[in-house]
Length: 273
Image (tube, rainbow, N blue to C red; front, side, top):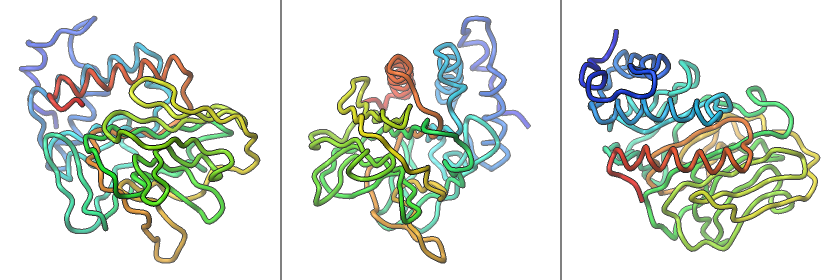
């Protein structure tokens, strides 16, 4: 089943023309789940996919949640593939044209596990936040009781932005928080190289040597997936999420290009910050 993208095909002609096959597959998944996308959202997503491929960033992505469609059905879909369709758990999620906002006691299960889906010391988490907020803790994360991969726009009590990747504070990337609106990437490319990017700039570089492995827990959005049976959610965040990606580590050039592409995507949707 395909969404009606006649408007997209006639109004938007990227290099080579037409609609990217991966974008169309995403549109089909949204429709099959009962969601809908506007013509503007389809244009933005199609451009996003084409641009990520041109910048050699697409291949590093394992999961991309563009947070379009203003519904759980649409926002749960992974743009990169049919794997890792997420599930919004709990009452109080706000779904809008601008993104998805947690209620402070809810979480989204991505079913993505860095331990099984990535190798070595090459991982990243990204989030585009539209909220200026000085409360909350982890916006995205997984912690197995030993090490964590997580992203904080603001961590109450620590007054930090950044994240764990993998041991806090030895090999994490954190900085005194001043702004929680924009595109943040927590990134590792080697056992002795982790970086925090914000709005296209490098804020922190950590060259301490990491000896631990990746956490063996699935990633939650809106908080950190914490050890426990049943699975526990902890360190809840409060920021509106307008884009998230999970995948392999990025070079400085790729991280810079990634920001430019995501900012253009948000601008097309009139929700840029």
